[in-house]
Image (tube, rainbow, N blue to C red):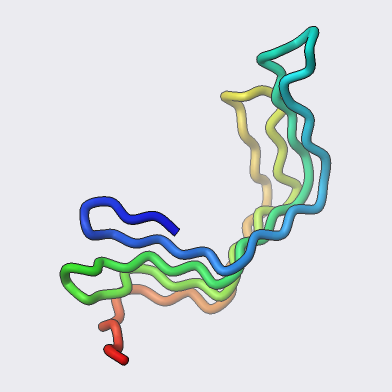
Length: 91
């Protein structure tokens, strides 16, 4: 959860299945990742305007790989229940 300039991002759950290597003693700049990551219940809200800009039930990054820190590959993306621009409900 983070807020900046009236925008609020919420992620319900992040599930990682894969390998992650970083910062070994002999290679402090090492960063490698490979696997699948799924983010569930994502919401990006504009609090000032009371609008949900984007809502997702699930965002899956399949076969994600980062062989180097500044190089990321995502050959497959899966999205469930994507919604744009909805008025926020006041409780």
